[in-house]
Length: 113
Image 1 (cartoon, rainbow, N blue to C red):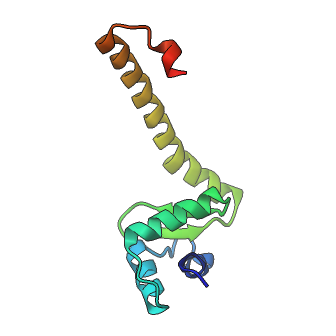
Image 2: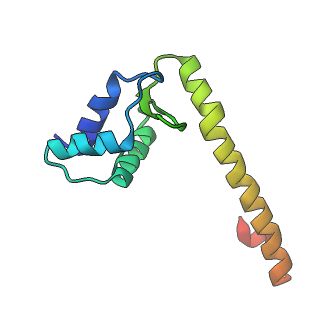
Image 3: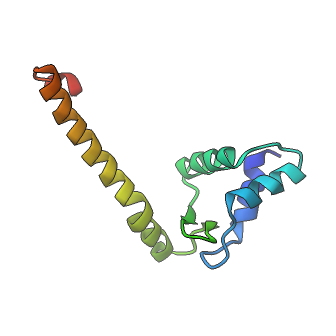
């Protein structure tokens, strides 16, 4: 058994009304002999999401992680958590590309792609 297995098991039956936070997950892993930080918990969850596991989160106070129970659950998370981050990163990249072209007085367009 690995720490990610413990994390997944702890999140498996959680809902948006009863999420589990990083600190609780780290403490649970520590009880099973895995000395991991809250940052490592976040990283494990990121890896599991990349593997297609539908772990969602609530970012507000008292928030934490829970499993998606429906397409509505997932879409709410996607549209309020993921999509704004993607758009912000695209905007940042576009503005930095523009600034780099101005700063270095060259046609960086070809070099950026």
